[in-house]
Structure formats: C-alpha cells, structure tokens
Length: 142
Image (cartoon, rainbow, N blue to C red; front, side, top):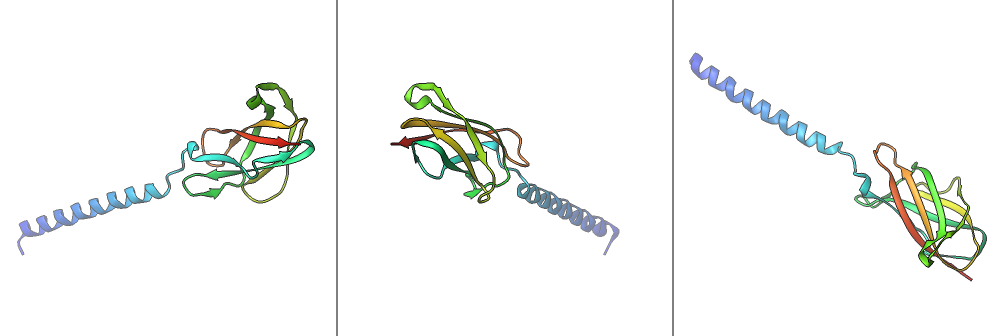
C-alpha cells in the first residue's frame, strides 16, 4: 500500500467518523428536547358539581403529546366566577386541597347558585418555561 493510499484511507475514515458523530449528536439532542408549554392543558375530572358550600373540583394537568398526567406543577393563579353566564362579578373563594393522585389537582369552593362557573387556572410545570393557563367551565346543579 502506498503512502497516497494510506492518506486516502485515513481521509475516508475521518469523514465516516465525522458523519457518525454528527448523527449521534442529532439523535441525542432529539431525545432531550423539552415539550412546549402549549403541549400542556388542564381538564375537568367531572363536568358538574352540586351547588352549595365546600364542593371539591378535581382537574388533571395533561401532557397532550404523551397523554400522561403531570405531577408537581406549581399552581399560582386560581379564580372561580360565573363569567359563562355573564356574571363575572359573581366570584367565590377557591382553595387548593393538598394531597391526592399525582397529576390530579383538587380545589374546594362554594357554589352559591346553580349555573355555569368558570375555573381559571395558571400553573408552572417543572423544567418548562412559560405558564399553562386554562379556563374551564363547570356546571353547578341544584
């Protein structure tokens, strides 16, 4: 084998190694890509509740792409009012109930009258930038 043949062989090996490393980098970075904050949403566990004091509302935080619930979110904004029925000034206090299943968040509130109530939520998901915001409509029945 001549020195020219050895140089060509080294060049081919070098190119193949470079291509392999680039491929590994591309595949590896795809595995650690984070979800977009738009890939998360809140869903009501039950669409209705009985009107009255100390009623519990359960919501699940879902990763839309994986279909799995998301535990450990920091919920920092909550509001419950009758905006769907044109009475946004009719608001009530709402409190987070600790514990429960991972990815399921429970709140206690008083539903002063029957009708449609809007639950507005804001949350931070661990490891993600941005805020998950949802407005869910729950019906209080007599």
